[in-house]
Image (cartoon, rainbow, N blue to C red; front, side, top):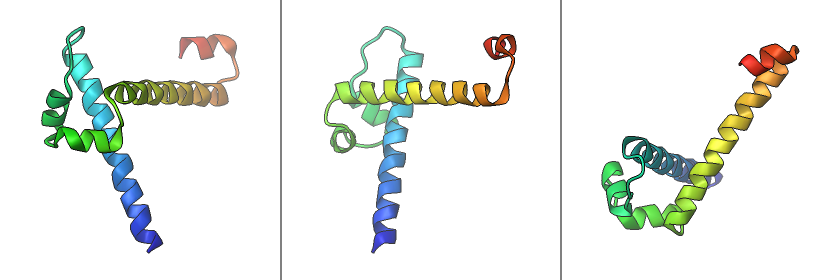
Amino acid sequence: MSEQLSSRAEKKQSRKEAILAALAQQLEQNPGKRITTAQLAASLEVSEAALYRHFPSKARMFEGLIEFAENTIFSLIHQILERETDAETRCKK
């Protein structure tokens, strides 16, 4: 039973990540343009309702994307700080 729950949680997380990746791609391809949930859902070949199963609102989707970007950046900074001891080298990376 716990394996099923783990598998469901992994699928849910991977779907959330797919939604965020598609949102990032839409923003990159259409800078400054309005992105609708209908467009986002179509790009993932899911329904809009499927998007809202993972995020309660469009604003939460954008917040999730910002959080993902922050986590990625801070993770990379942490890796650089661990590897490099010289301040000048750290800044160049």
